[in-house]
Length: 500
Image (cartoon, rainbow, N blue to C red; front, top):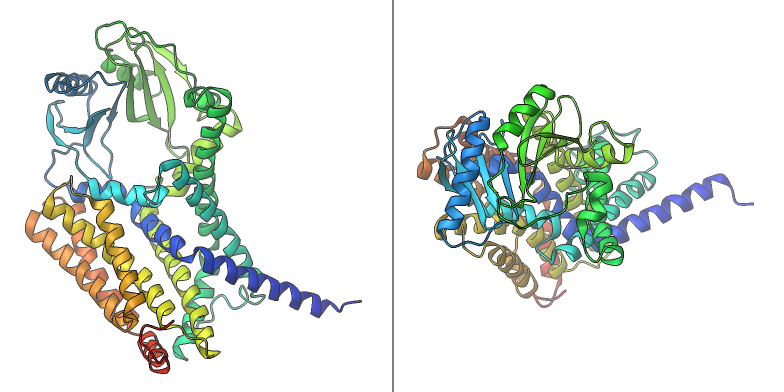
């Protein structure tokens, strides 16, 4: 009979082996998703920062919303655009106090009277969101990969706890003044414990959203001829039959006024007009409910603005409420700025956990005489090359305009860093590379402030955060200087500086 101690040791060893295997397989992509997810938390604020000087207002009146719909549709018609199948009016909120009208042909900001105020052109923010959601791959395949990575991260979190039986007991034990390797291991383990509830919530909801979207697509292709609306209908409501014959535009103002009377606590976030200008047109208003985790309830109206009922996301079946709550729980779109800051702090902690995990494994290989200059340089290129590539794409957006090829620029820059790490690993020195990133962050914040001279406090706050955050990060990371010395030692032991 095997003694209990030996059984426990076997479990620990197996968990540790599984933890390392999963981490090595997915660590690079997990880091990219964790970093971009941290930034995407405030995507509305990035959009505002990317395009300062646009007309802002705390609310958009029903009359102004009606005028905005007419103005944008008239603009599409005057420029020869085909009839749009959907029109979206995004209502102003605290994070983005701007109204946006979007059709199949693009988005436009409108002022408080409903007049077109400028093109919506936050292409860097859109590039960032797409990178986080599907890694710029074909959307279905990208969401499959990202959803699977969410499952892998959840497995890493669980195996990480199982592989360290004392990790909870030592939750507040930090040996930061010892050997940098010990300090790095302590930060990896402690941050893993401190952020475990957040990390599990984010990874599981991310996997649910990503793989769930793929599942619905598969069901649609298998049973409804590819019609997603029929598959989503049990959760998000059934759409009326279409009728393409021409008709006067719907009364959005009447629908908003009626909603304010029937559900006075609901705060409209989106107005969706289906098939505007046709007999089959109808209106949906998505509205937030205070102190609820759901992204909102969907209220339906006919073309005259008459009430047609709610979908049931706020009080319907449990499955509907769970589905409607997963989005806010994953992206932190509840509770305002304090929750957003908390999500970003936890997200940065997840980036540290991801990066230090592989760094610790590389150091262990080095101590065993298996150090690889190429491998260590490639990992440094991923950790510091990813934010640098994002910054370079941002500079391209401001220099060449919103239509610049930002996706291509990001991946070309990142693969260029990896190629340098493979061919000339001595050129990728962690301390030097992160210094480039921090200088680029400071230059970005300072340059944006000088170029646009923002008057909105929220926009100026991002500039200040980039500058101050870079300085604070530089001071903090000076406590971990071992990466350069260790990499140089590996290079000295390697006959050829490009050897792996």
